[in-house]
Image (cartoon, rainbow, N blue to C red; front, side, top):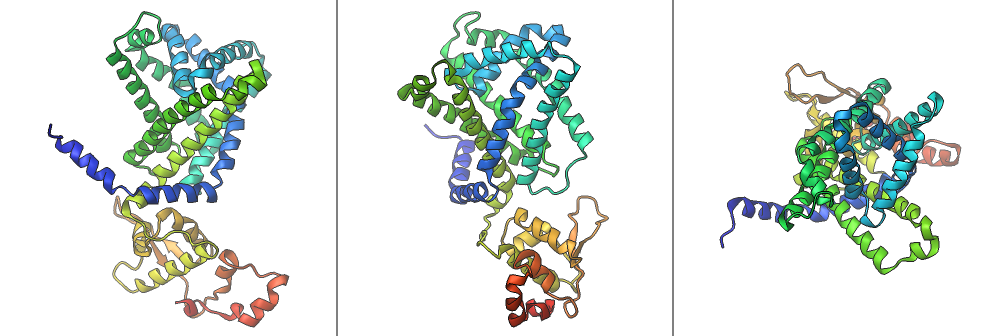
Amino acid sequence: MRSSPWLRSLLQELQHFPWKNTALTLRERFRDDRLGLTASSLTFTTTLALVPFFTVALAVFTAFPMFGKVQDVLQKWLIDSLVPDSISRQVLGYLTQFSSKASRLGSLGLAVVLTTALALILTIDRTLNGIWRVRRERPLAQRVLIYWAAITLGPLLLGASLALTSYAVSASRGVVGALPGGVQFLLDVIEFFLLAAGVTGLYRLVPNTYVKWGHAFAGGLFVAAGIEIAKKLLAVYLATMPTYSAVYGAFATVPILLVWIYVSWVIVLMGAVIAAYLPSLLAGVARRSSGQGWHFQLALEVVQALHRVRHSDRRGLALQALAQQLRVDALQLEPVLETLAALDWIGQLDELEAGTEARYVLLADAETTPLAPLVQRLLLESTDSVANLWENTRLSSLMLRDAL
């Protein structure tokens, strides 16, 4: 049986995909960006915000009775899709119980609940912008309005989409009856791509920078696949080694849920790294961070590159052109460019042509600009303990021309 051209093309792309560089990038960013610690923080915030989110969703469905029939199906679908089967029923019961009590809170209690939900959203916003190296965030009011609309309208939109296939979803959950095996597989595929689509929207819309849909979708597919694999592995572990149940008894659901939330956030953050660094991975970036002094080295190379084109027709270089010329990732250059701009050594032009990436140009005079400010910012700060080193090496007397 001959394979289709599309399948052959896909296999060829997978063979040439930089899997090794991707693994190295994930390891490097996980260490340097402290994603493990970030996932722990998000786990704590998520645990506090679970009930507020569930309460808001219940309030939305209560305000729109037309979606009442979809509410139970949607709740079960969300829990079954995002939480391992071994604890999904207990988690759904706890959330429903807590949310019913939270709905009776007064105005002050409701404000605390909503503040907790928004705290999680702002933490996610700050984390993803950090992965994409975004320094300029959206105004707080704009972020709150956008994400609050997502909290309230998200359940309605998802409920509407599930309502189109409510019979099939209900049957798959044993409400109507058994479905043929092929239909069950189709429903699992739909759940997989719904999760991937949700994460894709997260990567595409949350960072305050331009993210291609294809790159965001690649990260979304990674997260959806990672969540499914993690669910299976956790289910196997709990079945073969029931340590939690033996030690914690009826309380076992809580530590398992905390572990699962942490694992899920690690997967989501790694998917964000893939989406953010996919352009450089596909371009085959040959140079990586070489430890201490790396940013200082990049800063000198940026100044050297801009000095070489200073008297050319272009007079400067765009970010992607700099990254390609220096064979590094563009995200690695952004903090370096910010440092050089803060020193007034470089500037960014306002391009008149639409769709043209703004160029960076060299502003500093190499003959009269001392090198010491850059050394202090990125290499070695001038303090009393290293005063003799600065004096004997004459770092304070070096000029920019000495580095060019």
